[in-house]
Length: 84
Image (tube, rainbow, N blue to C red; front, side):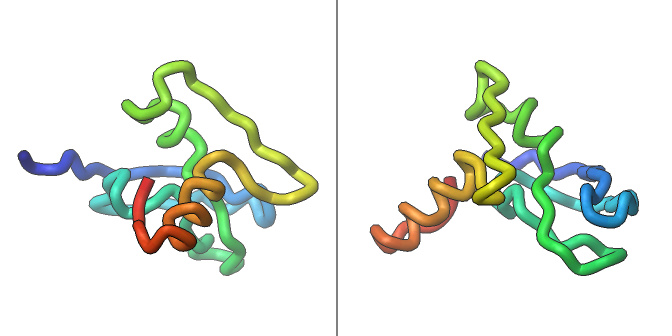
């Protein structure tokens, strides 16, 4: 089955610059670098509407700067698995 790829758009919370990620798919991950300031940002709108997030959960922790997507990546690295 071919993965659905599309353009993802997100505003950087650090510099307010609009980021356009061409040809993006969930397997690419939800964390990208801002093309304006270089800070790490999440593609929150893509996550919120993702097939694997049917309840539209957002548990962003502003103190730790993490969400459930980051925990999946950390666990994947610990178990030698990648992706979400």
